[in-house]
Every structure is written in structure tokens, then in C-alpha cells.
Amino acid sequence: MDPIHQFQIKNLLTFGHIGGQEIAFTNSALFMLIALAVIAALTIGATASRALVPGRMQSVVEMSYEFVADTLRSTAGSEGMKFFPLVFSLFMFILVVNMIGLIPYTFTVTSHIIITASLALLVFLTVIVYGFAKHGLHFFKLFVPSGVPIYILPLVTFIEVLSFLSRPISHSVRLFANMLAGHITLKVFGGFVVMLGGLGFLGSLGAILPLGMTVALTALELLVAFLQAYVFAILTCIYINDAIHPGH
Amino acid sequence: MADKDRADDARKKGGRDQPSAEEAALSARLRDLGERLGRHHPDRPSDSEPRPTADPSAIARGFRLSAELVAGVLVGAGIGLLLDRWLGTSPLGMIVFLLLGFAAGVLNVMRVAGVVQPNRLDPPDKRQ
Image 1 (tube, rainbow over the protein chains, first blue to last red):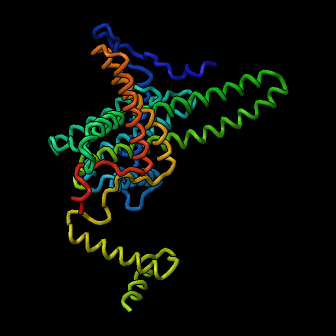
Image 2 (image 1 turned 180 degrees about the vertical axis):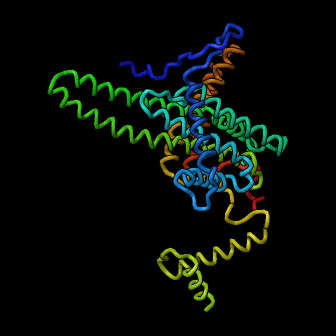
Image 3 (image 1 turned 120 degrees about the vertical axis):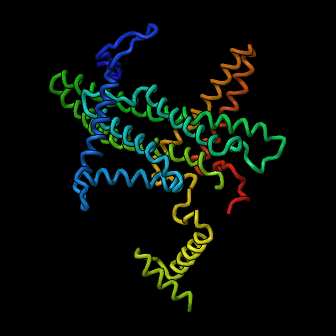
């Protein structure tokens, strides 16, 4: 009953070695591909009929589109809609990957910090590149708050820079830590059920408590899986808003 | 009389149950003002005004709060450690940057909580 065992990366198919590093198709990559297939089947398959009155699956897709579009529009304005493909892809990917991870015997891709960190860095670099491309050196003004006395300005600017640099860390650690902790907790309580169940009649009676806990935690994890995808998406919107709106 | 007309108008338009005619009149005037402002700035439609911290969900905000402080401290500690290693100033860099990182973390938390206005590229007095 090792609660960490579920996060192990296994090589399914080894392609070769580059510079002493093994290049392999892992279970993580497999579940990313599965998530991709689910999203593609959902978005392409369900909208293939292009019905004016949407069916069940088509309205799921339309609802997720509306949800992300509304979030982006209300946070970054209509100008932010040019980043819609990025935000929608991130939201759907994280949501589907989290949801698949809740099914027993599957692998949770977002429970590895390297995945969430690369997603967060993608957003971070997008903001920097777009900010500099659009505003040039004017983008540095993001770090210089107005109305601050000159003798304290260097300190405040430095704190602003640190605050900016901490964005990808909080962005990635939040998602990773929530998924990791949630899955470990589920596994531990599930382990309690099995251990108590092996202790005869009284043990089985006692096993009802952790079983109820597991059921409740599964519901909570379902909420967390959605909320983390939502938080990731809305933070992406907020950071993009910083890059595109100089006048607000 | 005009106010009363507007209030009636707002009640018809609003659809939702309004508590009093006064508030309805106020919201009608607000919408009127918003429309006029929208006409003034055709490139900036009044209903899609970007809001810096638009959080419809309070739980989402709670999740955000929990990680921001830690991230600031981590960044400060990381920079302090690297500077100490490169410049051999141990433990000065660590002390200074850990404190600065803590300040940045507190700033992050206050921004998420909405206590401090998020930074914008232009000073607030230039805003319309």
C-alpha cells in the first residue's frame, strides 16, 4: 500500500538514447494522448452534425466554449480573444487530464510538476514575448508603480519584479500540489478500508468510516479537478490582460 | 417625472425583481451613462470593459491565495541562494532576498484579495 506508487513513470516503449538520456514513450505520454483523443472526439465529433438545436454532447462543447470565452472576455477584454485558442486548449487539457486521473488505475498527468511547470512557463513566456512585442521597453513600466516617492522606488520596483517572477511558480505549484495531495489522500483512505477489512467483523464495521471518507473525498476531488483547471485558465487570462492592456 | 419614466423603463428592461424604484432609477441612470461612455469610446464597448481581478468563484480565489505567499518566498530564497553561490556573499544574499521575497509574497496575496490595485502600465490619472 504505497500511496506514491501511482505516480511512477513507466517506460512503455523506448525509442533510443540521446546524450545518455533515454527517450521513451511513458505512461504519462500515453495518458496525455488519451486526453487529446477525448478532447478531439468531444470537440470535433460532437459538433460534426452542426445542429441548430444542439444535442447533449454538442451543448457540452458549446457550454465549455462559452465558459472559457466569457472568462477571457470579462478578464482581458475583447482584445484578449486573440489568445482564446491558448486559454481554451490549456483549460480543456487540464480539465480532461484531471478528470481521467480520477478514474481508478489511471495515471494523473498533472501530478508531476514538470508538466504543470512547462504549462505555466508557456503562459509566462507568452506574456513576456507579447508584452515586449506590443509595448517594447514600455513593458518595463509594469514593474514601476506610479505615485511612489523616489527614495523608495528602487525597493518597490525590486519587489514588483520578484512578484512577477513568482507567477509561474505559484501557477504551477498550485495545480501540481492539489492533484498530488488529493490523490495521495484518496489512496491512504482507500488503504485504510482494505487494512481494516482484513481484521475480521469489527474491522469491517470500522472500515465503513474510511469508506465514507473516500466517497466524500472523491466528490471533493471532482470539484478540485474542475476548479484547478478553472483557476489555471483564469490566471492565464489575468496575466494576458497585463500584457495587452496598457491603458487600464 | 423623467426619473419615474426611467425607473419604469428600467423595471421593464431589468426583468429581475428590483427592490425599490429608487434603485431601479439609479441602475437605469448608470446604464444610460455606460451607453453614453460607450458611444464616446467606440473602440471600448462598455460591457466588455476588462476587469483586473474578475473572480466569479470565491473558491477559486481561495485556491489562488494559498499558493501566492509561498511562491514569493520561494523565489526570494532561490535568488538569494544563487547570488550567494556566485558571489560568495553567504549568508547576506539569502537574508536580504528572503525578506524581499516575503514582501513580494505578501504583495501577491494582497493583490489576489483585492486590497491593492493590480499594477497597470499607465498611471491611474491617465485613465478615462
